[in-house]
Length: 350
Image 1: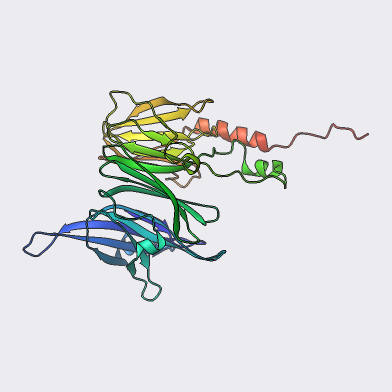
Image 2 (image 1 turned 90 degrees about the vertical axis):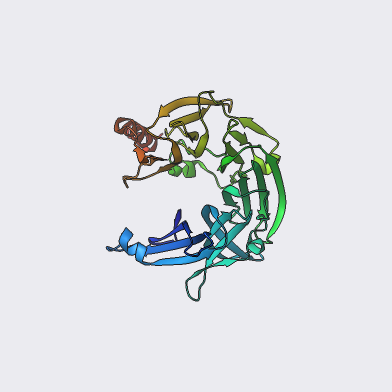
């Protein structure tokens, strides 16, 4: 399942779900579909109304990974369009793209190699894909991991629709997730303070991207600054022998210290927190047990109070971990103190 907001100024939810079911014919084959549901922001926005607006696209393969990304079109140096499309990997060792038709508003498969030249035939089904745009959508970094342990990373010139370079490696076991992470910490002060301190001569730093690869047997691997070093500069995260198969990963600043943490889930009912020290060395900070094997983790605002929660998808359902209110109040007071201007009423002007 995957979902996105199609509108830039309102709520227009689009939900994609891949479905596999037994065929009604005598050959006992499987029928596969991409069901697409949509709904706009209104008083009647609910699951029942969304389910009534279903578009069904028949697939000719068994789907593995469903996600969405931007289909970006350039005309020389002008960005012409930026549209959200569905990307699906299948058991045919290929990746497919589906775009909404402007004529009848149905979703149809497009020639993926024309817009995404990095998606060629792979040695085994693709399990996970991550796509990162930067430089005003003129460049794209794509990484994917396959069932056989094959991992590949590409840099794409989006304007000219050509590959600039690619790197690959093989782990020899199942890839649970690949994740492209900007090597940029959350601001320790508020953005407004950073903007005040920035001078006109300052330039934005070149983005540094790291690639995290989670696999089933070996410890997770971080490939550092992949735009510069490819897959040659890497380190591994520490892993205890008692920890089972790592199934998922989330990267975010969950303790508001300005440094991103890495959170892993396992099939042995564990949530693992990794932190980085001043020497850029990662260590295992905390291990927490949950009620069932973990299938996914997402750091998102579940309650609408403006503070993100840690949503854990397990075999028993969804469990939501919230921040302690006293801790949040302390962090908020520190941010307010940073924003508070000094008292200059007692100063004298010569």
